[in-house]
Image (cartoon, rainbow, N blue to C red; front, side, top):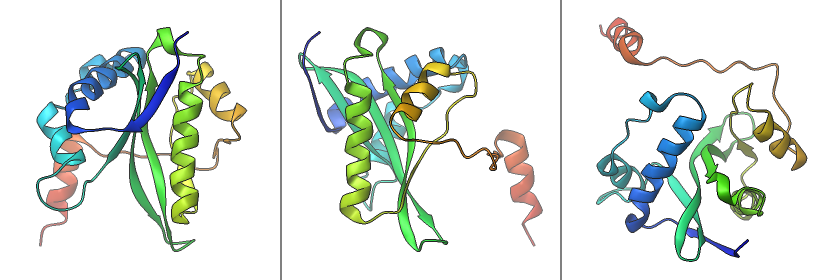
Length: 165
């Protein structure tokens, strides 16, 4: 197995980030859900004006992007500090087991520690036993007393309309 390196994503990495997100969507049995475009990723990660709404780290083997961690900042009213939400972590299957995923997690944990942030959080599908085992082997624990809710599509539009005076 080749050695790898990590670095912050650049605008030139956007096509690879989109590719990896689509591979992740295939793995998670929802390929139709990955509809993000390079233009959207560029605007979120590398906006012309203002702060980015997300950040990404990439893993490279022989100069090729083979893994990524895409994240954004949260805020805890309980701790009064920001936190880091890992939106997606993905390593190409051929490069799993080489330490890339662990290195990406360590990198993000380091961001939290360096910045004094209290939390590093993410979700994982209940059926994804390999990911669950990977995360738990690194000290993560499930928050079984919390349920994630989502509003999207028509329900989101309806909810937004209900808030209008």
